[in-house]
Length: 159
Image (cartoon, rainbow, N blue to C red; front, side, top):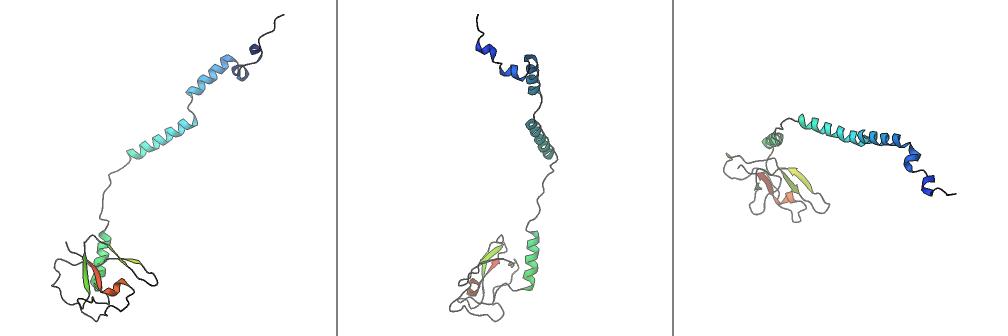
């Protein structure tokens, strides 16, 4: 008597899962049916296409318009200088910076106080001839503790 081969006794994966004709149908339907990842990719693509189609033209405004108005209003009511005069000139000194400069940094030593302030004042083209700033000013202290005490102040140029 002849024994059957071992491989014919052990069922294959296809035989254990389903009959051969049904297994082929299941495999075929899984290949044609979209999976969840396909649906997500399709949804993301549709959303991206709808956003791209609904975009309008961008327009640029004047981002510094409000700052210019505020600087102008501030400079109409306050002097361009502080309380100290420059040692070499005997009056406050205007350090002209480009009109695009918008901030200045003041430094203090001892107890550290490093601050940023907007540059409010701007010389106009019709500025009168240079002359003495009016008022009583302090000289630079023997041991200055702040950059404002040197009597040099930033003013934006007119060009």
